[in-house]
Image (cartoon, each protein chain N blue to C red):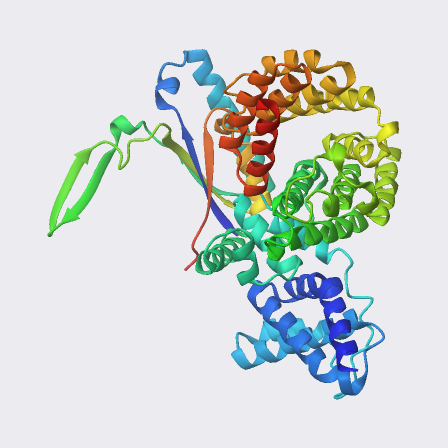
Length: 115
Length: 414
């Protein structure tokens, strides 16, 4: 089964992190990506720019409306994602628990609706 | 004969329902199909056992019939040849008219019910859904009865079950016993569901709501199954012992008028000796495993309470509450510990401990002022006691409790 692992965390904490802290986190993610790719579960994933760089698009009455910011103001913001192929939810939970961001933020595990 | 057959089917239902459903879930991966086919199998038993006789192994007979029904249904629905084949290969067709005593024993994996328990109590499901699924699929309780037991409309309960089964399918919740590194917390989740079932039933007034009282029976039945499937899990044994000790006193807890009888005034001749004996046996088995836990300590305390009153050792009970508080430091445990200390060392010592429980630690919990009332009464501070009983009365949730506390208040005011 394929799952989308959405990584949510507090952006302002990340923005105020020191350079060393930022580098340490990048290394941890690199390590996680390497391990999971070797294991064969990782299908893709990216880090996202902060929500201050987000643009939300809606089409209403045929008119394209683009506005500044994410579609919802929340305490934790979407900061990245992985697509993983796992045996079942238990494996997806185990993989999600190893994402570095799980220790400070939260990971939402969403089964992919296969078409 | 008919009555005999009906009794046999009822016995088989309690003993085998969960096993039949669990096996069918494993074979088909379809929870609704598994339940429907299990239901069909029991209906068939009611039709055929009067003429054919009660099979030697009712569980195997029922599983075979249910499995054949699943093959039929999948074939008729033409879901796909591969699935049909998958079931057909493990479901040997018994001779028509012959109660299927075919060689079921081998491929009937004994762990199916355990898998079902862990799946029903998976943390990805809400606690409410875990409870409902456990009652429906493992205990075979009807949606109507589950709804009545939890005081929600039937449509709400049906929806809850539909959603839970859909999530199991969509999210890929496995039908499996969790791996070793998850076993401890996942077992705790199963035990929490069983204990909630027991308490829901136990707190219901006897007679007034028989459906809810039935939850204690189901919880104990499932607890026994769990202990059979996980014989080395001390907390499962501890929970079963705890439930048995509590249940042993159920006939003595309420008098003929439906009024509460406090522990110290309960008629011990009404206690269920067999349940107490089994409780001691289970607890001893748990303690032999050498891994104490909160359920085992609670069971040890409950064992003290079913013993002879003149042998009751309040020092030991207070000490057990100390251990329990170390394991799970909750305000309820602190309250019970204070009560035990008040019996061991006197009401003054108990009252001092009660004062340490932050007032916001147990908001609206009537047993806190009730305990304070008892200690004040024993200290002879009658007007303060009456005031505490009045406070408890206003917070109490059932009529029986309110009547009891009102009686206490009047005694203190007299």
